Image 1 (tube, rainbow, N blue to C red):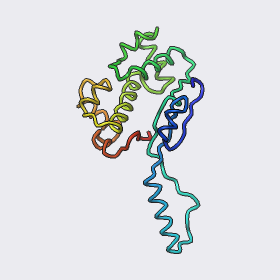
Image 2: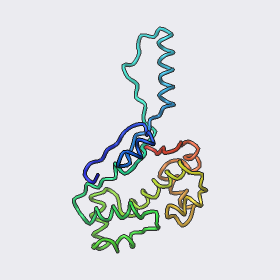
Image 3: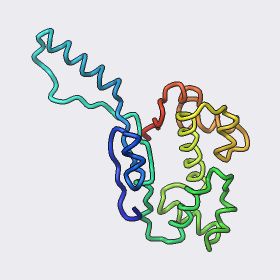
Image 4: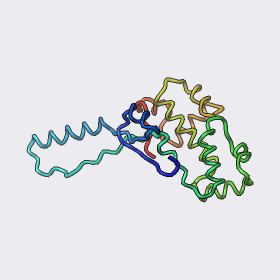
Length: 186
């Protein structure tokens, strides 16, 4: 589990949770697949000859579970920092608290983290929190205040503004458009 990431398709909840290691899965857009199939059938019945050889339907997202929680990072301090972020971002973690967990100065941590991960430690903390926000919006009926509390945001208004800025829609719109376990493909 620490060396290879595994991802399946079509989120069979029982299989995904009981497979020894909870299995991440791609979530198919079954409504769009059905729509495309019906449209193709209608064209066939109308006698169309110029039918596509394939139709691509983008997935709705990914249900991330433990099978893809792999850190393939050679720098052990950055790997440790990233692991700590993933485990504690929603507990109110900030960069100052993170620095207590890794034996690096702030400038060294930020420089190495950004070089290896591609974003700053603060941005990664916010990314992990927003992923958790998506999960709670899709899988619960918690209020925005409760979601903010469970994801380390002190103010639901800030969480909502950040969510809209990063996701392009409001938390309410996301909840309305999401089924259980649906997360945006980014």
